[in-house]
Each structure stands twice: as C-alpha cells, then as structure tokens.
Image 1 (tube, rainbow, N blue to C red):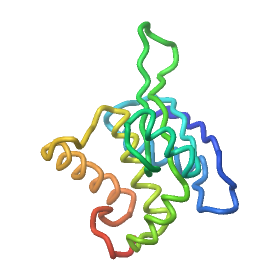
Image 2: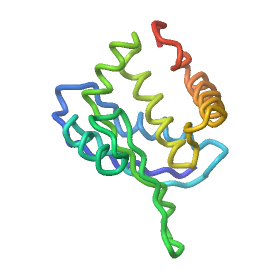
Image 3: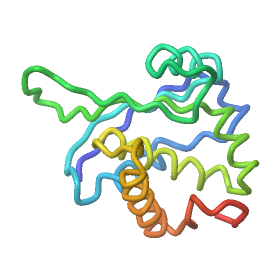
Image 4: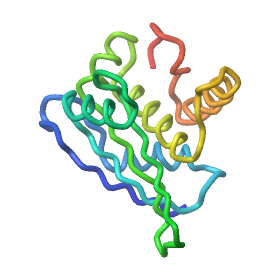
Amino acid sequence: MRVRVDRQLAVAANRYYLPSVAQLQRWVEQALQGRRSEAELTIRIVDEDESAVLNSTYRHKNGPTNVLSFPFTADVPLPVPVLGDLVICAPLMTSEAQAQDKTPEAHWAHIVIHGTLHLLGFDHLLPEQAQEMEIVEIGLMEQLGYANPYETGMPS
C-alpha cells in the first residue's frame, strides 16, 4: 500500500495531544485496507475558530466540529491518487476524549478512520448508512487494538 499523509499544524503543538505523521498514516492505511491501494491526503489540525468558520461555510452549521472531510474530485485523471483533505479540531478532540473517557490516541484513531471513510464515500445521513459505517469503524478499530469507539466510559 502506498499512502502519503501531509500533516499541517495550525495549532500550538504543545497545547494538545497531536498524533505523529506515522500514526496518522497507520490509521489512514487501516481505513483504506481493501478499498484503495494508493492515496494522498492532507490532514490539517486546527483550532476551534478555524473549524467553526469551515463548518459554517461548508456545512452551514454553527460552531466547531471534530472532523470535516473534503473529498477530492478532478475533471481529468491525475497522475497522483489524491483522496482529499481532513480538517480536525484539536481542542475539540481533547475535550471529547475526556468527556467520553477515551485516551486521546484512541479518539484520534477513530476520528481519522471516520474521516477517511467519508473521503471514500461512506456517510451516516440515513440510519442504514450510519449502521454500516459504525460496523466498519468498530471492526477497523478492533484490528488496531482499540475498543469500540461508540461505547463511552470504557477504556480505549
């Protein structure tokens, strides 16, 4: 598998748990397993202000969100297998992990996998879609040795 992850930091690196590029790549590769053999994507790690602006602009929702997925589409074939961009809000990731009694690493793994699945076309707008996506996420997380991300209050 050939995966290239470009990590962009738009937050203070010493204020939050921030996964390494190697961790991000491992989680992306896990989500792509059996679905795509090559991919390039950018993961931009932002603060609440930038997340809120992007969430308002692209989803018409107020406030920050943990992850935004921007699938890449091109009108002509490219020599590079660009998958898209993920924008992840570091402060929100920290508060969510604490609120859900999860380790920051486990929460980041889940959200990177979740966002990557969105880039691949998975969605959770309908109950059937949500159930399918959750089953896939739970399986991928278990393969990595993490607990079910939808069961809060459990160590992960």
